[in-house]
Length: 482
Image (cartoon, rainbow, N blue to C red; front, side):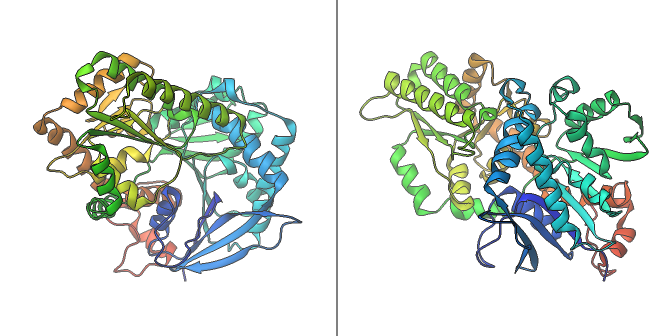
């Protein structure tokens, strides 16, 4: 039968039906990882349990088995809102000043990781390959090892990874971050993130050789695996979505104005206030653009229970009100601000319609908005990507206009350049980035990671062994040769 692939993440997104579009980035990643493989996706259902957690529930959709567990109110408050999002998230994003550590939250984080291990442990076979995702579950590998599991277990961090001196500000950092040494492979978005964690391990006394770190008789391999998108599928989606009624309505409402687009969760790491200030500076310096350009900022709210998110919302709305009051008139609103989510189809259509995308986070693991925007463009008449140097995507998409989001004048100048860029230069910049996305899509990301997890060497040298491991027919390799 071959080994199964077990995907584990904090939240599991179960489609309502086989035809329901995928919910987002993690769902797309799981689809790619489980393509032509037996396996399941295990994690939190999103429901709040009133009493003690019940046995996991299994749902089968599109040949994927989703195994769901519920969390209690205290689990969500301590593990999710607490240590994960009020401590680990800010530290990993270089924002030590925003962490709010408490022993109760740390205890809740350990408790939920143990509960995940308890529920998952009973479902595992000896030859299963386990792939754990993101900062919520750093301790799951340790907990599974303590229950006797010797499976291949990998971990992937979707966020950035800060340098050692920042990681060490985390109380109990050796217990929490050091828990990653119980995995066989820890993957990061960029080489910089990988090296930061490697340097951290050396501060714990780990010895390094060839990308493998040994500490207390445990060996862990570190690697960089930039996450991506379904490039070809997204191109098709955007072509069709560009003709949708909603996108046509947005175009009509602009009255011929050029469209600058920002799409971000409401999070302090996304640099939305800095972006608004840069747009304000652009309008200050370029009065000829008044009444000719509109910034559409789409910002769904998230983590409303965490204090800092309420504060960032107040700051953003205040800044936008100031800009619109200062520059707008009865016929033109410089910034449109929307606090809601749109489907992938609608977003793809808006990306295609936008003349410029401003992807300017202060710090981001990857930022798939940048990649989706490029894939959505008409190659014959592409828009321009203004991209923060502190997004992981900047390491790959180096033909974008790369900016430091802290430099207000520089971002304003880049926006002017983007809006006035000739067609020939837009094509020259867009073409190599699109080619890169087509070659390095989400499927290749999953292939490369799993090849390294299973054998510790590149996918091209492991096809025969992986076919046997995952039970793929000899004429249908689970990993394409690229």
